[in-house]
Length: 222
Image (cartoon, rainbow, N blue to C red):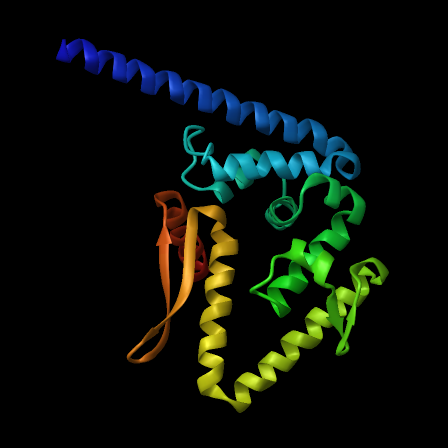
């Protein structure tokens, strides 16, 4: 009975892997097909990319990291892929369609730069601050949002130079958020107080660790 149980378990694992490979290939084929008309199908592409990364479907396809799959399969440039995924994660489809890709992404960048405690979606209700004034998202352009992101980052950089102790916490908060965004939903990172000051506590999957190792390696050899 035990041998039979092991055999069934192995068959189940093989069936699962086969299904994952099929699903991963189907999604890659969908991305390639819809890339012929990116303007119309960009959100479908983003959703397919998110599914591949979230479910780590690149692993049964023979890749150790999501980025390796992107480069080898040549379905999408890395920066464009992560841009699409950031928008898909931030907003439901109806909101994405209403805002458009560029404004959706500008709001994601604005939230990360100016209001890390708020989700990009919440800014549609609360509004955003432009030049010190609270304004509705509806009346703002992509240029307005990007300009405020640049202004905020410059102001923060200046504050860091003026107040090193306070900037240490800001840096760890930004680092934790950036790491979470870089490695997607396979990692959680948060700032924690330690005797020496501030640090980032990280929990990640094996796939996320592989991605981080590859990024570190490329920087050392570059």
